[in-house]
Amino acid sequence: DRHPHFEALKAVLSSGRPIPVKLDVLAQLESRYSAARAWIDRTSRTFLKKNCTSSLLEVLLPCTRHAFASATPSNASPSSARLEGLIRAGEELPVDVPQLAQLKNVLQQSKWVSEAEAKLSLEVLNVEMLKSLLKQGSYLPPSKVVEAVTTKGRSLLNAALEWEQKAKVALKQKPPHPPQFFEKLLEAGRGISVQLPTAQTISHCLDRANKWNQEALHVQNSDRHPHFEALKAVLSSGRPIPVKLDVLAQLESRYSAARAWIDRTSRTFLKKNCTSSLLEVLLPCTRHAFASATPSNAS
Image 1 (tube, rainbow, N blue to C red):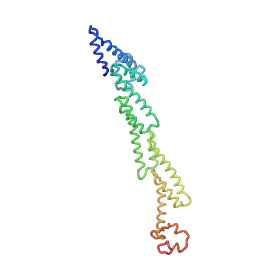
Image 2 (tube, helix red, strand yellow):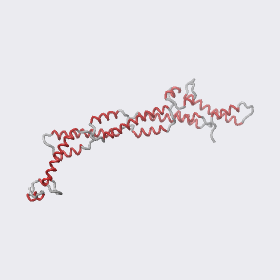
Image 3 (cartoon, rainbow, N blue to C red):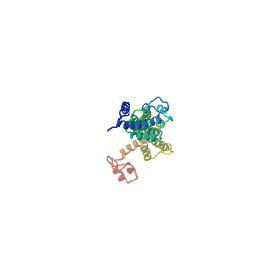
Image 4 (cartoon, rainbow, N blue to C red):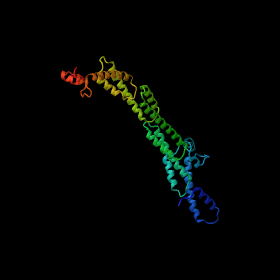
C-alpha cells in the first residue's frame, strides 16, 4: 500500500538491470525511479549551488540561516510558494523520497520564522501573542534557526513578565513608592518591545497623583483655612492613589486635629445614642430644644 523507498527502489533496479532476461516490471520501476530522480534533481538545483559538496538531504537537515543561504544559488531561502510547488510535486511521486519530509519541515520552519520575525518587530506585540507564537514554535522540528528565534522571543517574554510582576508589587507597596520610582520603572518598560498593561495603570496613577498634588497644594497654600468637608474630600481622593504624596501627611494631620476637636465637642453636647448631628444641635434653636439634646439637659 505504501510507495517504495527511493533507495530501496534504486537497489532493486541495480540488481535487475544486469539480468539478461526481459523483466516486465523493470520498465515500470524505471519509470518510477526516473520521476523521483527528476524531482530530486529539480529540488537540488533549487537548494544547491553548482559544485556544492553537500548532499540535498544534508542541506535540508536543520541548519543555521547562514548555512542554509550559503548553499542556495541565490544566497537566499527559496520562497514559500516555490517550496510548496516542490512539495506538491513530491507528494505525487510513486516513490517515497526522504527529501520530501525534510522539505515539509523546511517549509514549516520558514513560515514560522517569517511570521515570528514579523511579529517580534511589531510595536503592538502583547504577552498573549508572544506566548501563542512560542507555543507554535515548540511543535516544529528542531532547527538552529527556530531555536534562535525562540530564544529571542522567550527572552522578550521573560523580560515582560518580570517587569509586570515588579510593577504590580510596586503598586501594592506600603508605604507607597515616590513618583520618581515609577517614572524610572516606566522608562525601563519602554525598553521592552511588548505591550505592558501595568504600564498604563502606572501612568494613570501618576496622572492622578499630579492632579491631586495640585489640588492639595491649593488647599494647603490658601489664605483661608480649608473647609472640613472639602479637606475630607481631598483626603478621600488621595488615599487610594498608590503613589507617595508628600502633602498627604500634612493634610492628614490637619484633618486629625479637626476630627479630634469635633469628637471632643460632640461628647460635650450630645447625649449617647443621640440621632442629631453636632451641627444640627449647634444651629440656632430654642433653649428647650437645645437643652433636650445635651447630656445634662442644660446648656
